[in-house]
Image (cartoon, rainbow, N blue to C red; front, side):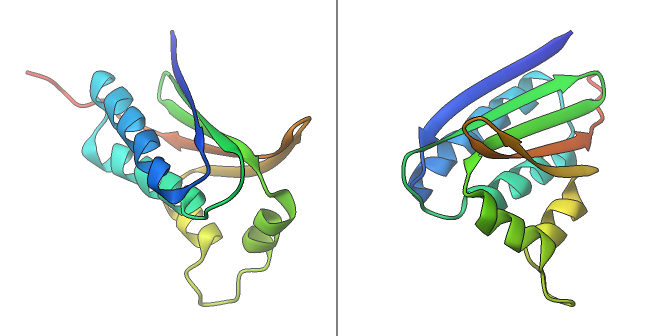
Length: 127
């Protein structure tokens, strides 16, 4: 069974906390470990920290032990530049995302660039 939550918010930084609340609620409902939930929160914060025009959609789903998040549409060229040309030794977006996710992929869709993030998760053991 796949659980999926999709939210579309304005691209202003102050609205990114809404995405974090939704993801936190999904994580709690699915009994994710704190570490896995925190990793996804860090990844989202890194992607959503930039103000922009219009809206951004965050779709989070979990299927078995895979937690996936799609974020977009984003400014593809600027994001591609950040992901591909990070200076050596610097802690930038690519390094953060690769530290908390097993798969990071920038994909082009009809409406623009989307960042696809996948993390292997464990479910908390409840007594």
